[in-house]
Image 1 (cartoon, one colour):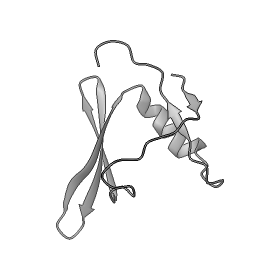
Image 2 (cartoon, rainbow, N blue to C red):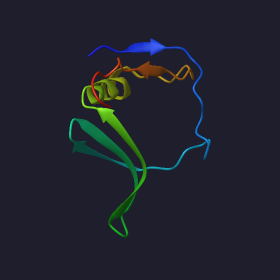
Image 3 (tube, rainbow, N blue to C red):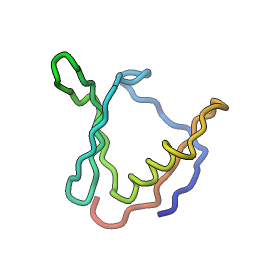
Image 4 (cartoon, rainbow, N blue to C red):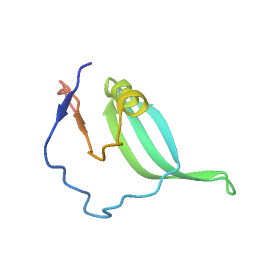
Length: 91
């Protein structure tokens, strides 16, 4: 599935500008979508707590993987926004 690079302002979250620490990630299938849970995992307690959850279309997961794993180059310091084409149907 194709994506496009978009240059536009991105509003920061209201709660915490710096985000929430995460040291683990969990992927779950939820119907036709994927839940991406960012977690804090404790080796001592052998427990994890979800600190943020993102729901994406299944077609978007390979694009996320590609951009993070292969193409994403933040060495120039410029953030990039990748936009998934519209998902049709009830969402």
